[in-house]
Amino acid sequence: MATFNLRLAVVSALINERGFQFDAKLAQRAVEFLKSAKVDSDANMQRLSEDEVHAATQRARLLHYLRERFGIEIENLRASEVREWLEHDDLHPIARLLLEQRLEASKSSGSKYARGLKIVGPRSRVRHSSQLGGAGRTGRFSHKGFQPGNMARPVLNIRRQDGRIELSGVKASYIDSVIIPGIYSGFALSNPLVYGGPNEAAALALRHVITSAPGNELVVADWKNIESRILAWIAGEDWKLLAYLANDQGTGHDLYRLLFSQFFGTAIDDVSDQERQSGKVSELAFGFGGGVGALVTMAAGYQMDLGPLAEIVLPRATAEQKDKAYKAWCRAFISGDDFGLEPKVYQACDVLKQTYRESNAKINQLKLDLDTAIKNSIKAPNQRTYVVGRCKVWCTGKWLIIELPSGRRLMYASPQIWVTEEPDEDIRVKRKYRRETVTYITARDKNWRRERAWSGLFVENIVQAIAADILRHSLVDIHEDALTVPAVQTYLDTLPAEERTAIALHVHDEVMLDVPVGSYPLSRLIAQMVRPKRRDDGAVWTEGLPLAAEGWVFPRYGKREAMKEAA
Image (cartoon, rainbow, N blue to C red):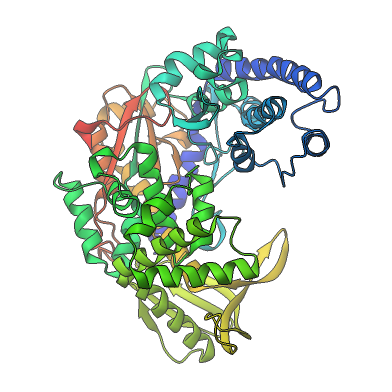
């Protein structure tokens, strides 16, 4: 492990020193464009609000005006809340325009462009944007400076003829050919059906400010469904692993599309890319043991409308499932934890949770087995090592330790078990049951504090940590392999010694190379990403895990369609 860690540290330092090419010209134009757009936006807000609100960013003033002038008791001005109000058929036209101005102004890409211009270095490259192990418990990479790991998905808010606001995915080619020229020309200030709005247009173009060096191209690939695959692998959910293998071999369906079809009653061939995201939301929400709350949170992040679920799901549910869902809604309504959902919608979400757990029995059992192992380890430290989900679990007293398949360890300081008594989940029974909750100490805001944990959180930590290990091992493999390619090596020899790596950036589960045109095929990058990962002793620790990746080649970064011939 020590040998690999040293190699990884060297590669990570090289990647940070190399950095990524930054299109300062586009960034500067975007900053100027947004400054001009803000003047127009502020003038519109003043005119529409009768000089009560001077800017769309004046949250308190806008909330007050909406309440006093139109009787709108909106709780906050988060994008999801604003979109929900814009769906109201009886919304006053002026209130609608004010909320649309707020939604448009909520895009925060301007500060990122400005930050990039401030930190861009020699040869127009932004450096030191990632931090090895910076994401706390899981050891994932974190990002800083320009924050390339924190860029919004490319979706456009479109107002249809009936007044509804609808989110539509935007292709990278459209951003290249329409949005970016619109920013340069200033045309993106008009025609919301094409650009969405000035802030939205700038947000869409944000990824595209990352480019290849002159004479080079970006070779980019990311792992497909990696967290879902890892979860199925550590749980032994064989049907799901086989489904992924079939999909990889071209004989099966994409699993997220399969899930959407199963949960929402849509024919697989008719599932759109946005609906596929909904399938992904369900998988991520329920996969880590979450319930309706997790689904609501994920749905908000992916702009998934939960409203239609009642008509789609409840008619297909069994009497037992509907009975459980009704009881769950009663408990949630009484405690105020129903998330403001209509009763039937909440019950439909609960049925989905039940269906997921029934069809993923081993994943559900993993959560229970891990919970038992962790609590028993804390109760009896230094007594036994448990093997759960391809991991080892034990407690020394001062530390709860989970050793991952790679050999890396997750550490939880000063673990304890808190015991409380809570009402029975069956609302018809007046009794209490004993709940045990795992807690540990962690650093937050430069202070130490004790936090609660649950089995689903530990499962999530393990899955994300394994994904981080796959990325770590792949970065080393890709770096070392690229150095064996003469054209790449010749190019890198022209750079300072501390920058000699083909890897310019990695974001979450995506790796980006900046290399001479045609020097490093996409298929070769993918082969390095999906190859078995080995420990220092040579043992393969990803045995049985079906890894797959896909990607694209282009001079400018963006969420581009995968090149099918190389996938």
